[in-house]
Length: 586
Image (tube, rainbow, N blue to C red; front, side, top):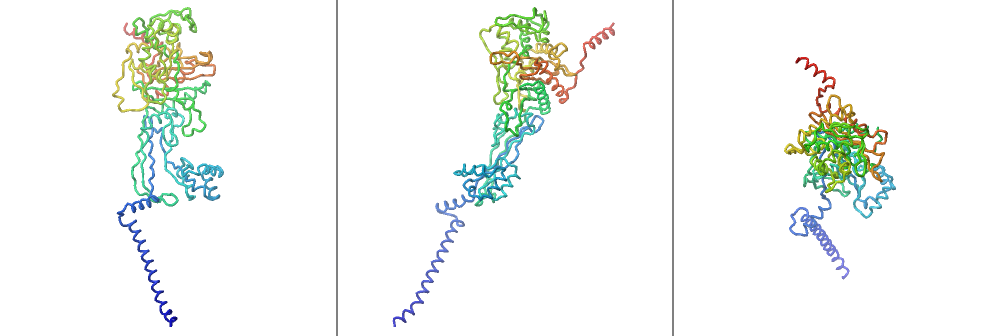
């Protein structure tokens, strides 16, 4: 009887359990669906749900930086000097990359042009990090070859790389940027804030391998940097660089530099340096080649300041270009030293003192001047103070000031020793002479506000013209700078040959050859300074080494700028014209 009852109850209990389990499973499924709906569909009302939603998004959504384009640098005519080009940088998560197979490692190393052992060593070095660069600044197609390997943990980032089309020709002036496209030297550094852009940001969806699968929105647009227009005229820059490079090589010189100014505006039209370097590939470049010597190097100007000493004498009113100085017997003893001329010039006027660069004549003038009057004139012309170019490391020069001047100090000062200048300062001083006493600010950058800057009248115009006439004789047949002559144009200038300082004082066999001048002399357009440092061959005088560079560059510059030649008559032609005129009158 009991056995029969047990058989009747068993099926009912089984159905009840089945229904109960099925109901619980359905309820669990409904609960899960409801929970997912609250997380993904129904607006979350509770803080906990919002947190979970944010955590979900955090695993798929990322904010990426959008690289900003760096402004270009161009010359005054719009020719590109520095431009940023798009590149890709590859980076990796070392924790993920260390687990790849040997074959994938070999393929990756080959694509990166690395040895597998070296790549493995780099991964080991960064084993505790989540970021390392695999290769910076790859061309887009090169980066794509690596990404096609489809290796987890490798990502790409768009960046910009600086390119300099003119290469070594204007390298020291422009400077360069680092791998992060930030200015490091030259004008790239000086105007880094102006050229740099503002990076943007965008929201993207990443897959499990960290690859971008969808762009969602631009959160902030990248702001490109501003372009920079220089005062440089690349036609003149190429010309100056070529002639300077040739002169340095021919004379076995250690270095050289040249500056060309527009006398009408103060713009720097060319600034060439030797030795130079290729800013697009700086591997193995020595730091000396990166220096912009035209603005950074200070040097004693030597005889190129003798015309300024004569100008100081003219300002006293006690001298004229025809005032005679007795230079006999060809030397003069000053306490501490004997100063000599190449020959005994005897009695010569101020003009011939400049023509022949008489050391004795200049010394006698200097000792007759009020000690500080010469320093004050040099300062008015811009020596001893920075020209305000904004170039990093610009040398202000040294213009000593003393309460008492020793006679030999006064003499040395008058012919260019005991003070230092940079090439731009000296060019500016000669530009003042060219502009009949007007001093204009020097600029490396074109500015629309420049016309608002009034030039300063620092010396009298008639005196400046008198000194200009003296400087023209230096280029004549009997002057020291005749190799600076340019056919069809009147040239005014002055040579300088400066002893270099050695370990025990001024060296007897080491020199710096200098030439400073402007062209055309009657209506000046360009002023320039050429410096050839330490020529090692037999020639070392400024008139032999630096003057020819000036002549060659200015001849080309007059053609490029389309400055019409002048009708220059020879001495015989002028005499014949005068005789003819007299005959017609009689």
